Image (cartoon, rainbow, N blue to C red; front, side, top):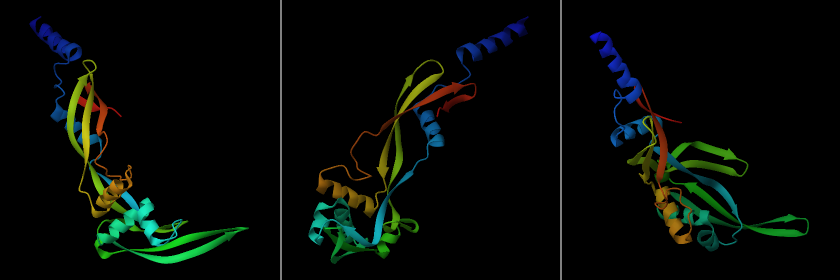
Length: 206
């Protein structure tokens, strides 16, 4: 009889009160997030190489009014690429004639260390992908219990390991007065995820 009572007590403890499962702490939630969300995430940008056509008809306009031109100018000043003006060309369609500025872009050896993958081609020419920064987990900021078996976890992420390409975008953002930079330090970076308690502990919900 005593043995039956003991078994019933254990059954009641696990099924009805969940006393066999640990409390969801911030450190445990951080471990679960690390196992289910890939960090660091590499943030990338695209650099067009070779001949570029632009609506700006002078090098000064291209590097002061065009966001891409400003970015490329900053990168050339930092030694990551070389930028040269190739003059103006004209294209005619019916009675309309359009003037195009021509720019030539070359990636310098110092910039190749941030290149991701081989050079590629598309309908408009050659390009490469470059690393801008890493999106990294920061910390768990709070846990809200929904019920005994479900919780909402809030965590922050941050940008780290800015490359010259990422820094140049931020410099461009300051000059343009907008939000152009992929690794901008502005903005809300708090994310909410759900977790559920099972018989073997807490798990991440997709």
